[in-house]
Length: 311
Figure 1: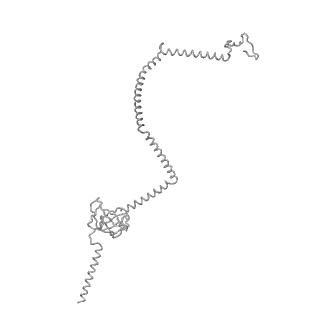
Figure 2: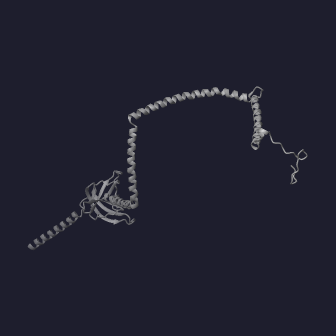
Figure 3: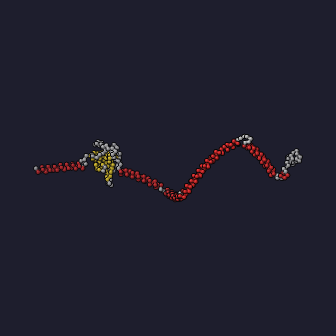
């Protein structure tokens, strides 16, 4: 009888121990809460994310990572299967990001609702609802930082080319010329300030007033000149008529007479030129008269020349 009691106690203890083990496995396995599974899709690196990693919704822990694998149909995509509390409102506008805890580098998934589409995201065992993962802040900083560093490197390389020895000398000359130009500009500014003093401005105003008065008087003078030209127009017309008048008392007759007088003066001038030439050749003719011409053949006193030629 006592042996049966010991066997019964041992059996009950074994059953209780087995039940406690099953309960522990069930409890620590996280299956004691109602959950839903979703697939987070990304093409970026998921460095630091591991199985059983946390899933947070707006900072609150709501689930964990169940699996990380490549998509069979498109190996560029990484599928992260997560299980989260069934009561979490996952919609088609929900997005995911990678977050990191401090300096440890352990990653977790952050779920956020953009509000673009409030329709609930449906998920089943055969077709998990997909949540698109966006680039995290660290990834954006890494990409931007890398591009910035490359641009800085290129800028420094070009700056070294620009600031070589020759260009530095040219730059020094330019700065010296700029300094000289600035000094000249200061002198010009001083002279201009003196020129625009109050006394000079008064003189300039007086000069402008006198110029305005002269311009007004010039306007009156131009008007008088215009009236004078208009008055001389009939006189010119009459003078043209007199020049073209063929009558004996007209200016045309006077012009003919002037032509005759001009012809006579020309003839007298030619005669005077001959007289002067004769005096130049034989000045004694002024006292003794003009020289006589030698007699020609058949005239009295003609002498035959010795060479047989006649004179």
